[in-house]
Length: 403
Image (cartoon, rainbow, N blue to C red):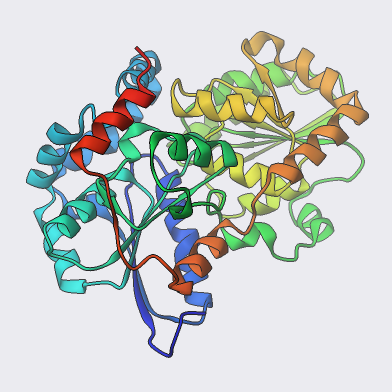
């Protein structure tokens, strides 16, 4: 609960580059609306306040790289992961293209601003240093690792996924007291009471065999059709649910591929398009197969769900994968041809599955959104922003330098 009786106006800013940043913001918005001490909650996609060319650069161009040139994306991720390396040029470019966003923030004058993407965070930080807003800026990192682009010259608090990331920021020189290990915010539905039997029954699922949940991601980026074909070769009696996402025609193509491949009697397949019931599918699944985006990883952990990593995006998803593998939550399949072999081995080893579930539960932070909101409403020692001066930036870059 916030100190005193004054209700806080909370502004949440995301960016629709992928879906994870927006989903994290939506989770925070839900919790804010359920929490006392918040007078008004406003959530905007920061890119909606920019011109079409800039918007396409951040969103459509990113998806194109994921689909067609992931190696290039991974190269840039590693190349730019040095504190303040591209900061000045990027800030100038973003300021030129976000003037409507700047005006909107000035009009709202929020008490608390939460950013789930580095673009609005750097704009708010710049406005704070210019003395144009007096909001408390908090930055919620939506992957397990921390990329240098998340660094802001002025802020009040960071929220990160794991202890290791907090230690990384502390070693670079940020005050540990301003970095909270919250986990990645996910929809409160992942921790609410749930009737697994009713969900299975409503979706035609049996309890007589394990359920393998395959996700092409919300945007349907991934080899879902080939995955469907290869999974018809599973030997373990199973039911396979394939979530196809928003990509136009993908569900129909997957179903066509299943018909062409022929499904054996010991297997059952079900296809699902875009769904807002991912919390249900994950909570009835025995194994999850997909790409380890930050939100997807956090959701699977909240459900105690063993993860089979396939085709992670070079960069942030590779790093998320490393953490899941290190903690014993995941296995990795590098070749689609070996997916049936690896799944059969995993499904045939109940002790290993149980160990992976236990490891997932230990790493999970299903109440991350609540932790973020409650921490900010406490209004303790965060009145003054942390400002990273130029000399401190140079030292930070020296400490973190990889080359």
